[in-house]
Length: 115
Length: 111
Image 1: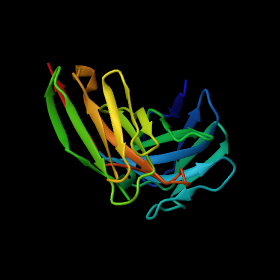
Image 2: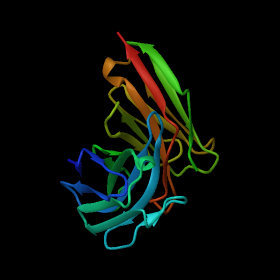
Image 3: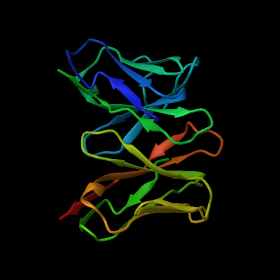
């Protein structure tokens, strides 16, 4: 149980284009989803949290207009990187948490490379 | 506020023990432990919710010292499969969404 999927696993895009990453909880309802960014050999940095049907809460320093998050249902959240630039290249990981629970279950991550 | 982990890296021989510490300058209300292998997402190991709590699974256990604002992860008789980077994570008392990962401890278990 507690399986989270992410799609795509990796994506290469050109500078200036937008990229959408999907995060799905496959066997439970995720009232909260988290989006993290991880640079090589570093820890995961929380970008934003989203509750189903509500606007996402962004961490300080994360541009809302650049990283658009939509938590449309209890099983799906999307992260859209708009007008991507090479410095946005990173490993993006989502996690999901069920109502009343504290532990998070992570998706396999999406490696974004912006050329 | 990101918790601090120590040590940053550990090299062990198979069968040896290790302890990883996680400490915070702010009050800890819950501590999560995760393991991440290279190129993969973190995998949930366990969560401690109460001061003084200890729990474990097989030969990996953890303790939570609320007063000292720290938690420790104990790996006993380490196996090759234990290799990876271990992260602790801490959350708020009422706001479960305020969650921060520690700096990470890279564990390398050699035959």
